Length: 468
Image 1 (cartoon, helix red, strand yellow):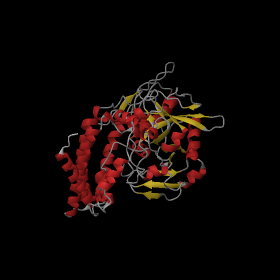
Image 2 (cartoon, rainbow, N blue to C red):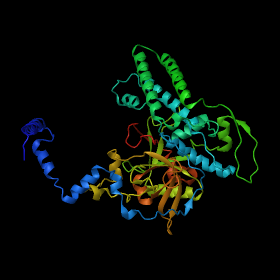
Image 3 (cartoon, rainbow, N blue to C red):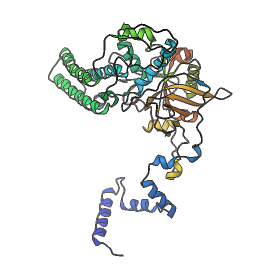
């Protein structure tokens, strides 16, 4: 074999450098690297697998063939729904989910055909309100140093297109709703990333200007006037890509065939909401969480986890899974959908629309176990609530215990199982996090917890990234 002296010299230099820099400082020195390399001595079969793994998706290779039998799509209890919505390339799952909960009830009560609310209408105000929340946060923290944790968090997160049910409730209470035919989706509302990055850049610039003005002696009133002028720029930017939200419109519902038609009428977004929905989303619903990193049977509030400055932070009751399941089952049996969120990316077979911890055998493929508990995954930022969907079905055994669940998703009718996702109860236990339930399905002992003063948590807590 011909030896390349130049290569040998380079290796020797590298090993010497590694030893010199890594010795006694916790780094990887030459001896450790030698031991690490020696620990992997693949057989012929393992070499073949290595070649396959280098050129293929891990999920494709880890697909468990024993779990590829025909999927059970029967559910003992289900809420009727019509039409699958599509958030496309945006992070608005929270808004679609909240509106899908309302939509199902409106369709049933009004005997409508397919119907959908305008998501872009409320999203316009969501982005305007979040811009104000950020700018006012900058004013409120102007006396703190720039490296203060809250100030740093604000500049890292001026706004996003993600959110929570609390945002849905506050936005609708303030601005009402309109049918999708009144304000339709735009390219940017369906593809939010590029515009959002520009809006965040502008907000960060505005935040710096507010802090600079404060340092130069500007008083509260002057800063508020500055903020108003900045929000005018934000409004104009939003109007250019999303359109101007209507303040009044004329509309008539499309009834099911055989039902008497209704003449068109003129509404404001607020009057439309009151007539066709009328729920008090801010007070009639309870937000539940399953977070094993914190004590159960307590309430928690997350600072700055809100959509409007004058709105509500996310407030929830932390409960064991079995208690949450009983409320979910009661709601489904009464034909009422729920806002539900989870870590949807874990063990998802997207082609079949199945969430099952047995979908993939990563352990056999990679030769190691993945042994963290749900609590440990949360603590290490490995898992958290990432996506909101509408919980609509449960399949119960003869003893009333759940076998599997079904959610209506907002990824279009062609995704998953006819636009829905089925999850096993075992998966539900591991990756379900949030559920919003009508108070009438919530036991008194849970409602009593909301009378207590909640524990306030910081905005950067690992459990509270917005759902997308």
